[in-house]
Image (tube, rainbow over all chains, first blue to last red; front, side, top):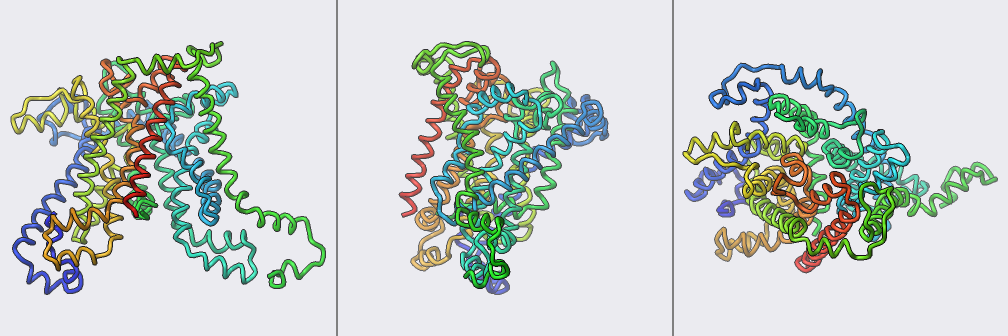
Length: 293
Length: 312
């Protein structure tokens, strides 16, 4: 917390001079900061690294503490998971459900967020945001009943509907704060130039909102990909998504650790790669609306 | 305006399409908002009403089976149940409070570390992002291996510094703290991102003024930065708190049905899920869910009030 002793404003303007004049205390802080940051990074990355290592070990090696870091890597776990356990199918299922539910939620959510932002429909927004608050289990019993009567449980439609239920509030929430920050003047001048209000929304506001929609879309894709509870109840053998598939892995008597870690890696790697390439969108989505006060 | 609209000037007769367009523009507010609201409304209000109804019946086995109206009997059963319900309430609250407390304190610390630019910032940001997007079930499995009492890395590490192996997830008293640790690992990054966004939005002036007045770093943090950050901190607590109360994935993935054989990590959500889908006690589970929902709404309301108070 001695961080605040640094001569901040001058340091940013004239880095050279500030560095020369830096007092001893600030140098001590600098060292502390580096050590602390390394500790934070290790704390966050090490478990994932351990999972990755174990996924390349045979089960014999996993049980051998002496082979924690030095072992002969094997691709067998991945071959097993992908071939024998049909993970390609689950990957496709997860992808399909996440993609369709995100796309449909954007179609429903973006106009809704626009109306709610422009007409300050706070109470209506609250209805949609309720979906974020309500415990999923209380929805699942009635859903299960209705959808099993309609013979829809185990189909993609129900899974997509349930994931939309997660995605839509998220999209409305993010897009509302995005539209709130978009100046009204652009639309107004477009209307003066002869566009109808809907036309102004389509030709002016929407093209300007691509970044916001990317943020909302990426986050809702991730949430859908990671969703477990809805898929646990509503998916069938043909529509099983990755989180459920990985959960089924441990229902056998003894755990095949190598296979389990390979499966866990297969689930997390695609989403992490997406996250790495879309970092700034994820950050802006996660913090949307939080700093408005 | 109509003079400027080409469509209006080109033809004299008003086509059906134009009629529709005019109508749509006049009613765009609800035309835009209604589909999403109807979607969410149908999927929420009807199930919620049903849950409320089920909580007043003795429905079990199958929702289709005949059930009798029993009034508030389920609530009486649940509220006097000191074996499963109240311990679950206690676990839910302690899980949420401890996890949230650690996440806010750690998150604030890390956010302060990241506040001013430095070399290698990019890599730290990547490290912060990864736990955040990782699939919770997979994360649960990962920790199961790390915390395995016999082969886990956690006990290997402890062994290096001479601490005897711990039971972690398989211990009756250590299971809940271990799952709290997992939650902290996965979600502190989210708190960091929110608080960092708040810090970046702060103006430098109050801090500068306090420095001019001779305040030291601690004083400036606790009397200047923290009060200014309070709305953001409460927003972070609100966002994270709702999800922490409802934590399910890592608990079910690491301890399975009923939160383990001694219900070590059975929170309200896990309890309600078990009642509904492992034991088919719909009446009871609905009563639990209604009470759970009231706890969530209640804590949200309190926090929102608090946020309004500090924002003024």
